[in-house]
Length: 427
Ligand SMILES: Cc1cc2nc3c(=O)[nH]c(=O)nc-3n(C[C@H](O)[C@H](O)[C@H](O)COP(=O)(O)OP(=O)(O)OC[C@H]3O[C@@H](n4cnc5c(N)ncnc54)[C@H](O)[C@@H]3O)c2cc1C
Image 1 (tube, rainbow, N blue to C red):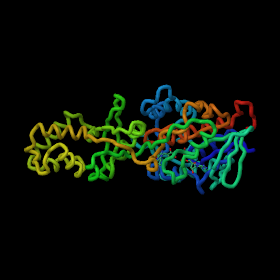
Image 2: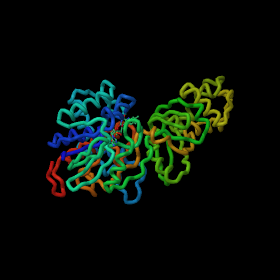
Image 3: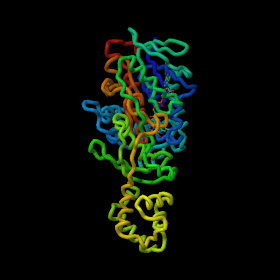
Image 4: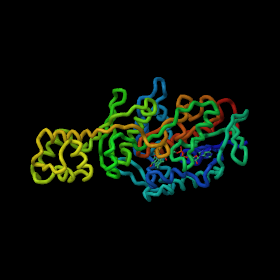
């Protein structure tokens, strides 16, 4: 019987193996792919936004999403302890001290200075192996069962007995990277409830056909507003029009709030985009008035395209009822105010989200109610631990999700190296 088996050599599984080894437990990691961290390699567009600068409490607060169901454990509360145990500063120090300098962008996103996700992956693998972890590649776990002394894990070619087990199999997004949802099935087989997995941090699909003409048009620093159960939700950041709706960080962050409501009620949700979020409505109106007076002979849409993408400027004019050829100096005041309202509150109707295969993360997963947040150990099956995206945790864009993997992975690894609470003392 081995001490510890970890299923999944992604960020959470590798960090768990490192922390288990530091606490004198050698892990065997089963990885279905021929290499580790396939998803990690595509993070941050290949640059890997590996954490977000901030205190543990700030990071935890970012996980506060839509209101949780009555009695449900809140993500923010669940994460607080593990983020204090292995904080963003600890993650940065971990990589820095292993020869990986960092760049911190003005918005707090932290990347390796060389902008290579592969370097992050290589540091993790090298450290895990150096400390004695044994990674078995092309070893897909196909079944898991509880036994008297621990767990039996069946791969395609062998059966492994382990006194402890960490499930770090990831979620369901980008399944071609290896995260195909096996961990949910294993967790259920071992007595755990799984919250239905849904796409999060994913582009939104909208009803309005005109967005198609704007596909590829990017906007910086917008605000997107909606209301859910009479509660205002506002997200901000960059966005992009797509063939079927909107994407980019702001739209993806909003998807965390909308995905449950869309899944449960199947109703469409109205949203408003503030295209000029830097100015309030009055300031925007004064700005347009000045511009239209000084450039009276130009068309309205040409004036707008001096500070907005040309195609969007034209669309906004048409939506606000200004003709294509209307000259700026001839636009009546009421129509200008209507144009300002359209710019500040561009209405769209969200009817769905793109498929989970295109999502950055999975919302849902192993229920927080049955995991001890002080150890990451199962409350129903001693010796079983969870780390990373397989857990019902999903944060916004900006390095939060990988930080969650480092923190839950470190705590799970450390806890799994301790004697079992039910008296077992193998490790
Ligand atoms: C395009 C994209 C960009 C992203 N960018 C960022 C970013 O910049 N910053 C950020 O914080 N987050 C980002 N994320 C999210 C982040 O990548 C994930 O949250 C993170 O990879 C989850 O880590 P994990 O270890 O829990 O799971 P995974 O990374 O999914 O790893 C799970 C591993 O388990 C293996 N596995 C699964 N089932 C089995 C089985 N049955 N047997 C053996 N092995 C198995 C898989 O092959 C895989 O290697 C991005 C995600 C995507 C898709």
